Image 1 (cartoon, helix red, strand yellow):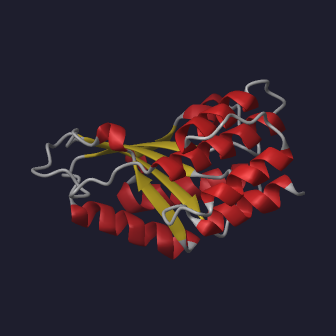
Image 2 (cartoon, helix red, strand yellow):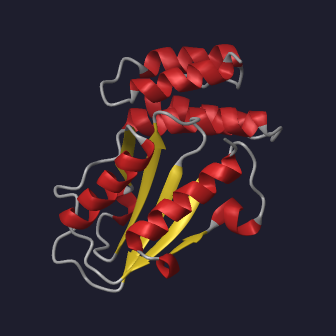
Amino acid sequence: MTIHHFGNEAIDVLRRHFSPGKVNFRGSFASGQVDEYSDVDLEVNVQVELTQGFFDSLEACLERQFGAFSIRYDPQERHDRMAQNIMVNLHEYPLFWRIELNIKSDQDTSQKWPSPFPDWCVATSAFWNVVWAVKRARRGECDAGHYMFNACEKLGRPGLAYSVENVEILLSELCEFHDVDRVLVSKLRNEITR
């Protein structure tokens, strides 16, 4: 399967779940700039409240189609009861093929879900900085070191330049945190050694 096939499968699944006109590509899929490191960025517009039932149904749909995954609800929207940004990381698919859903409703939900809204844990945030460093290096972009520095800063440790060895050092440190998804760490380890 290619990233193009995967992206089209993801949008088809979500269009069946929500309805065709309510789900559209954004980001690299919308602009035609897709590569093997692209996220599948989707905008979802709905006319229902963003309740627990809404998100439970969405998660069940994703699990039926794609299997095990981890999901993060973006805390930048913790106070917006009409929008939510969600990152879905599928365990059975390439690490870089994350589904990112930007969900917008035309209805004000009475209580923000999830409740209480989870904090964005520092270690998981640092892990994604490492993923972005690898992604940027693989694309031949010059800012991989910036993302490594951000990861180190979040972990309260001296900065490391980008290298496969330094990525491995950070991954070993990140495994000490209980909230980091071990499956995703393992997938990144496999990625940097191939």
